[in-house]
Amino acid sequence: MNQMVVQSLQGVGFPSLAVLIASAVCFVVFREHPWLRAIGIGLILAGGTIWAYLLAFGGFAFPPRESHQWIPYLAGVVALVGCFQGLRLGRQVTNIALSLGMALIFFWSQVPGNPLALVWIVALTIALFISTILLQKVIEDRCSGAELALGLALSAGAGGIAIFLGGSAVLGQISGSLGVILGVIAILAFFFNTTVGAILPLIYVFIFGCLLLSACLFAQLPWLTAVLLWVAPWALILGQRSDHPRISRRARALLIRMIGVFALVAIALGSAFLLTPPSSEL
Amino acid sequence: MKKHYLSFLLSSLVLAGTTVAQADSFKIDPVHSAIIFKIGHFGVGNVYGRFDNFSGTVALDQSDPSKDAVNVEIKTDSVDTNAPDRDKHIKSPDFFNAAQFSTATFKSTSVKKIDDKTYEVTGDFTLRGVTKPLTLNVQAVGSGPGPKGEPRSGWEATATLKRSDFEVKTFLPAVSDEVSLIIAVEGIKQ
Image 1 (cartoon, rainbow over the protein chains, first blue to last red):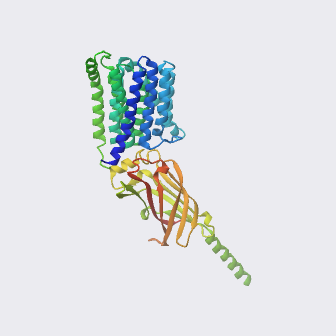
Image 2: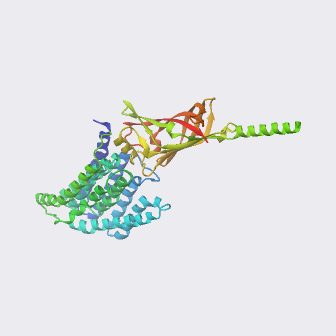
Image 3: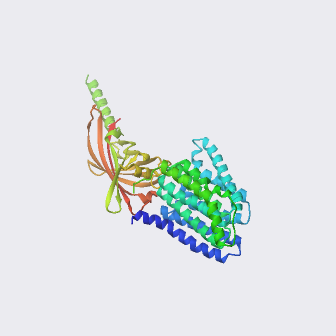
């Protein structure tokens, strides 16, 4: 098999397998302690994301000079913030601080020569902050752990394909890894029928957001595709959450709730194929 | 009269001396120059590419070689490997991140004359925001008037670098770490 494909599969597979094993242990050990479970899952997700980045780019850059080089550091910060937010401590303050921090990552270097970049910083901060609130307040409260995780996983996984088509195999690989890692959490949350914690929306907004923005600004991911992927989990606002004890009932409810997400993800991928046809360069 | 001849002779010598001492400055003529790279593919072959947009200067000072200088600026989004899809990928954050780092630069720090035709030019090469020392082995090709009579000189330089030194690690080791460079330039004397 193509050596590059093997490398990519390993880059997605190893972190996902590690997250699966560690999270399963966490779900079992902390079954009766939701906040400890949330902290454990937060740290495991951050670890999986950092490992996925390491396998994709072959190392960390310090100090980071490029937006994507912030991903491992963002993952660490997001995990810590997620732990505090699990205790309902300073949610909105930390959300706005993270949103502003990410906006600065992308636009701060442009401020000296281009004051208009300040407008972009404010706009991106507001967009990220609102996205975080929407996911945490509206969607998280209306979704079971599995529903939320699967919705985010579908979007991030499809993001991997779209970013690959947009010209960056490595950013695509990290997004694919994130999708599989979130998918693993969705499976565990489904079988354990439990919630996961505040970390999931944070990982989505700040890690997947960083990948989408990097791919749009520095590769050739179409903005339309990125926006469709970004809003896809918002479709979870439709329908009723199901924590029914019977697996079959939960599974049916889960599938129904995913219809909207599937539709938006399918349109996003369609737009990516139309706007950036598959390449044959490898 | 003798005094006049003497002063004329002296001033001529001074002027001639000034001409020799002056640094010759050359501007790279992109039409008759090329920057080519070679990189290994799966250990079974080599892929060649080039940069279509670059500029630079060469300054040579016969009397004070320490003032010799070579500066080259390469537009990273002008990479051309005869495969547009691959070029798009090379410009992405996986390799050059050309949208953020639009140029790669070489600025010499020392020029060592090996013999009449050979130089060793050491300098700082910056790619993707990372600066590392790089040594170019330079051969002087020739000098003479161009089609419009303008004075020209030509050089051909080779160098080898490790892309991982510049934090470009995508697809290692399938796509080799070692990259060979050929910089063949004609300079027009300014």
